[in-house]
Amino acid sequence: MADLRAGQLLVATPVLLDPNFAETVVLLLDADENGALGVVLNRPSTVPVAEVLEAWADVVAEPEVLFEGGPVSTEGALAVGRLRSVDDAPVGFREVADDLGVIDLDTPVELVDGSLEGLRIYAGYAGWGSGQLESEVEEGSWYVVPSIPPDCFRGDTDGLWRDVLRRQPGELAWHSTRPVDPDLN
Image (cartoon, rainbow, N blue to C red; front, side, top):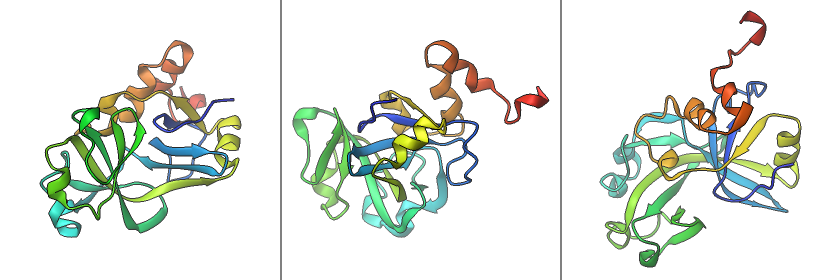
């Protein structure tokens, strides 16, 4: 059983067919006895940040669009940022792991601008109740793996699922080339 904690990645296994999560990579932002919360890193939308949160348009990493963070509270927005220096955390920054954290979007942009190496805004999030995510991991729906800094802010997210699996040790890396239906191989 995996020890779930903030900052880790959940990589959807091929058996996870829920269209909300098929071939997704989820960054865990919170995980404790009450449940877990994360955002899908590889589902950019076509909606420019400038159309929805104009003040943040010049601060977000490319592509400068909202990302579909998950099926929960899709009308709301959540921002994830990486600090340039852990000694320079701005007002409104809540640490998730090391230099990665959640940014309060009610914070004036000028207090945050310049202190971040990257910022991405998500519409909605993925959420699990107490014990739910642990059960999904145990049944084989998710691989739990460590994250690396480039995962959260890469410009082209199309290959993120395969790239995260490919860098894992042992047989887990083999799953990066697995067809959807192994019987057709």
